Image (tube, protein in one colour):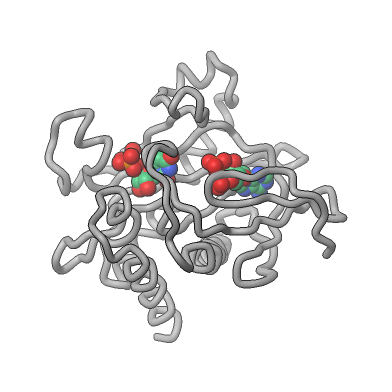
Length: 239
Ligand code: ADP
Ligand code: UDP
C-alpha cells in the first residue's frame, strides 16, 4: 500500500491518497480543538489512542453487522480506510443529557432518556455546524430520505452495541457523534472515527467526567483520561 499525496488536513486528522482509488490513509494528530475550533491545544498521545480505539470499536461493530470504513491498521497513527463521500451530517446520539443539549433546553446534565435522542447538525465549519432536522436535510439535499432512514437505523444499532460495551468497562456512554459516507456504489457505511474525541463518557460509579470534556472545561488530567479509557478497553479485551 503506497501512501501518496495529502488530500485533506482537518482539525484532528490528515487524509492521504493511496495507489488504490477506493482507499485512503488517515493519519491521527495530537491537535485538539473544541467549540468548533475556538479552543485549541495539544493532547500528547491522543492520535495514537484515537487511532487504536476507533479501529477496535469499528471492528467490534463490523462483527455486529454494521458496515464501516475500516480496512487495516498500518501503524500507531495510520489506518487504511475505504474512501467515501461523507454525508455532511453530524449524527449525535444522546443517552443522557449533557453539553449543548442541557444548555439549549435549560436542563441539568445527567438526565437519562427513556429512548436515545438522535440529532443532526449540518457539517459546515463556516456556519458553526447548525442543528437541523430531516426536513431541512432533505430540502438542502444533504441526503435522500432512504439514506437518512438507513443512517438512523445504523446509529441506533451502534448505540446499542457501544452502550453495552462501555457498561462492561465501567463507564456510561453519555453521547457521541458519528459520520456516515457513501461508497462508490452508493452504500451507506460508518466513517470518520469513534474515539474519546467524539464521545462523552462518565465513570459509572462516580459520574466523574472522562475524556474530552476535561479539555473543553479545563479540568486538567486530559492525557490521563484518554489513557484511562484506552486502559479500560485493553482490560476488556483481555477479559
Ligand atoms: P474536520 O474536517 O472536522 O477537521 P478531521 O480532522 O477528523 O475533521 O478530518 C478528517 C476528515 O476526513 C473529516 O472531514 C471526515 O469527514 C473525513 N473522512 C473521514 N472518514 C473518511 C473516509 N472514509 N473517506 C473520506 N473522508 C473521510
Ligand atoms: N461532538 C463531536 N464533534 C462535534 C460536536 C459534537 O464529536 O463537532 C460530540 C461530542 O464529543 C459529544 C456529542 O457529540 O460527545 C454531543 O456534543 P454536544 O452537542 O453536547 O456539544 P458540545 O457540548 O460537545 O459542544
